[in-house]
Length: 274
Image (cartoon, rainbow, N blue to C red; front, side):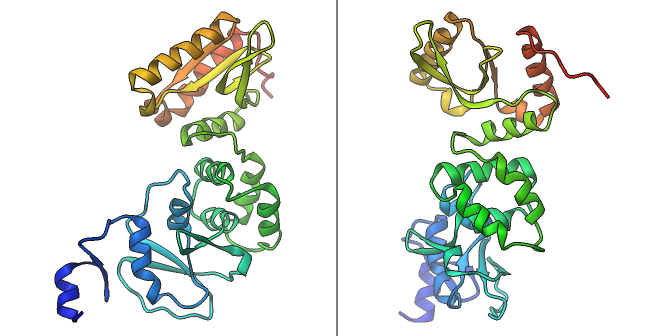
């Protein structure tokens, strides 16, 4: 196929890189178009890797690639290149593409991601099997002196595979940073016979309080019916269910104040101020 035919059929992603109009314009397809230009040992990283691994991030407009410090890659629009020392264990294959591992991606994003969002990404990677405490600790052990490693080490103990959504992770982090008692993710709710009838997104068994996030996925009639049934079962056994939605994610202090009020109503008392 001639250059003119390629340019006529394709959508330009960058200098010399085109995507056929017959191809699905999604992130994996765009990454495949860039593969022939990447040097040996390179991998897709940062937000691109997080999205390819299935974390709670929006697919980036620009593809991110990680190459070795001794590799040169000419600047091209549509591709952001960062240099890192990558070991073989720092790269995995996803849909036929070289991608930085969950641990490497978490460490790389720690440079440019606020802690609560970093935990949300780490939770998703953990839940999807791309990350676990052992692999993450091994990568952080050899990250002394790297930018972002302090933040990564601070956030690592907070990760859990139990968080089912980004809002759950964010709210859990806000609570952990507050004077409020630590919540339990996916807290089991048992009836008076000891049978677990549902789980709360976050909860405090001692105070019989459940915190639930109601996102857009709860808008269908089927999901609404299921939520009402879950909340009714919890309430029947003495649990208070506090719900929050997307608008509360922009007002963390308001959300925390309401959680505090709910906890106080269930018998918790704030620690004395120093």
